[in-house]
Length: 460
Image (cartoon, rainbow, N blue to C red; front, side, top):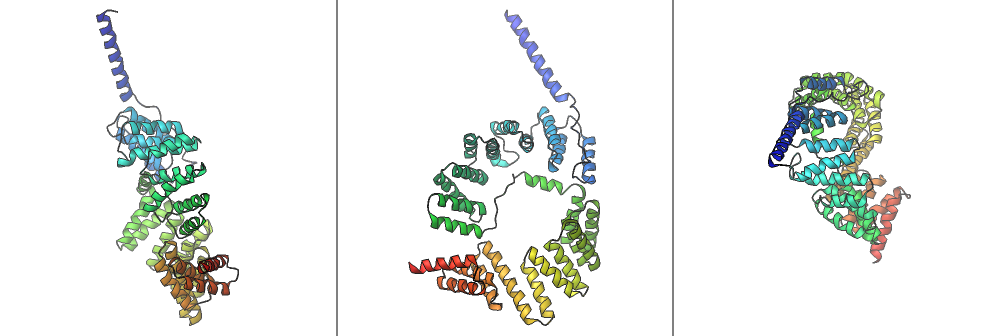
């Protein structure tokens, strides 16, 4: 081939490449995947907003495709969102944050290999969007999770090790090591996690299992007990889920509900009531109905509040919050007997200091000093137990001491006081509390174990 021929071939190739690029950017996309709105658990107002976004869409505008994709993602329409991100990719925009969201859509549809391909693009391009400097590490975390779903443990471990600053990656790696018989390596990772997040239940539980695996029963018991004094759970959500929640707040009747909450904080109760009612009429949900009932109470309409709360019970069953509303409305209407019944029922579902305090006040108004003292004791017990579960041992002891002073016949108050004293190093006080618990309930197993532990400590 002569030099001229080679030059002509190169020119033709360049022209074809240019035509392909132009066609890729300007060719109209095929139709959007159809959404069967009749089977979607999505309210009509949201569906209407999304349809309007579809109508306004300009095929050559990547921002429009990204916005539509975000709306689809927020309501679980992942095939449609994935299609939109594919169109964004064809337009080669400067903002490449869509790659991470595109990968997430593939993940959520179970297409792990396709998701990995997109995450690799994020990694190779060294992107810092949409999650800042940790975008690449979150991509490795997600690749690792995909390999775990495929039961490819070695590849999963390799990926997870490349996300050293992501607590969830470190925790998953520790769990894999535990299941692989490498508890000692797992403990090193768990120690790092517990240094930064001492109150996470799962970290303490796994540290207990790892210590047990290595034969250190005392350490295993220590971290098991720490897990019992924890309420903080390991987040299961990717950081982008917060974006989903925020978008949902701006669409459909959820936007009206959010407006109602905002107006209430501004003291505009009547306006808040109207927006709340509008939201409930558009799409009924338990939390919305409870909020509307609460606003009816605040604006002096207890009968309407009871009607709304009773509808909640009829639709989804009794909840402590719903029963509490009925109790408050009943007091406003002068029916204290009903208030006591529903508050006692609410305590069976979710005991709170607030409910015990309300019952104590009812007994005080009925001139029942003994009954009032018992409920005030339980109010202090529940407050102390809440502090105990948050590992606030000093606060727990203060409230539990008050609880047993008001009423000394509640076994659990004495048990948790015994536990609190033990953790604070008051061995004689702990032993006395366990003994009193067992006088009230001789079959209290945890108190029996606690007392046995005290005997072992005393014998050393």
